[in-house]
Image (cartoon, rainbow over all chains, first blue to last red; front, side, top):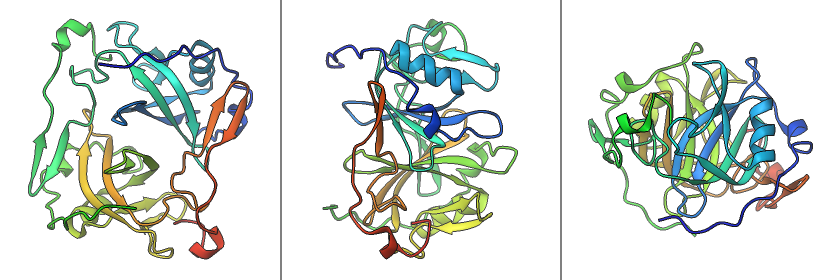
Length: 141
Length: 141
């Protein structure tokens, strides 16, 4: 499915961190987008450490608000996200992660977390799970 | 540039609102994506009223955290976003807005707010303004 992407060399967070405005919880929003198809996969959060780790390892690491700790995407499910490019928005409170997603991004087993659409007076499910969530080990992919 | 999109009929928020988990400030995150190119334009916030107005009018309305009031995108700049489809994520704290963006989304005059990319040890500007921000009247587009 996914095309081969050259490995990203380790990147420095030195230029990125001063451009970020972390919120009162020390977080920025992070939108993950599949780099080649443009599909928006999910939104999660990053603290300073998650940004640093993501840039230096090339593998996306978030900060889990529910667990209050670093969340290396795919650490339990194998559904990792390799970083292709990190972009910063105009006011620095959001990053856009262009990624290469292995498998599925959503803990429900769907490719994207945005699988419900408002159509007329209904909320319609637009995608079915590609894998059994039970096979993904745990709540978060 | 943008293709003609059929006008969205007014939609009901009745099925959407129960699926949303508003945060302690009464907000959900909203990612705006150009519906045909897949370009991620911006991230902003919506309260309950903004979601309702967006669905019923077909024109995107956010909630401005800095001004603490509804922000009808383009009200001062003319850079409106017409809603093509609103999607809800798995845990209901984020919506994805597929939109048809008139002009530019960013208050800097750029098409997208994500115009800085981490490359090696630098943060590189990847897009220049398409319009003079002074011509957009005010801070927010």
